[in-house]
Image (cartoon, rainbow, N blue to C red; front, side, top):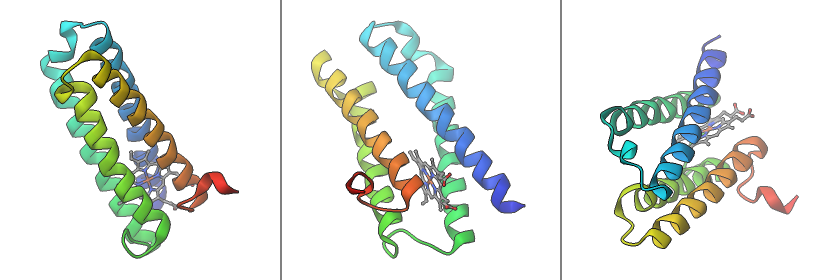
Length: 127
Ligand code: HEM
């Protein structure tokens, strides 16, 4: 029961984080002022905290942990990379092409994280 609630929360927040990241990327490319709207600066952080919390909850429930189990270690470091690339894409990137490059790279890393999660394997594309 707890597992299902956490898993659904995890999956829901994953869909929301991806949607918001794609949306903010589109606004970044269009140089739209919407990217600076108050809710746009708050909601992703609330959602991402829930995403992280549900991930940690699931890890505790299935008793597998980052830095202990390979696939969660890979997920953990890929998540850090995704966050760094995401802040370059949305905020820190100096030029437009730097931001777009970081945005595309972040989406690729996100795809890698999902593949690792589905296969429980740090090298999901070698199957
Ligand atoms: C961008 C961040 C993340 C993405 C895209 C993501 C993606 C996913 C997906 C798609 C699943 C479902 C796999 C399935 O249905 O079998 C999943 C499950 C899971 N995730 Fe994440 N996750 C993220 C962050 C995290 C974090 C930070 C942790 C823990 C520290 C974590 C731990 C787990 C665990 C333990 C499961 C359950 C696996 C199972 O029961 O088989 N995730 N994740």
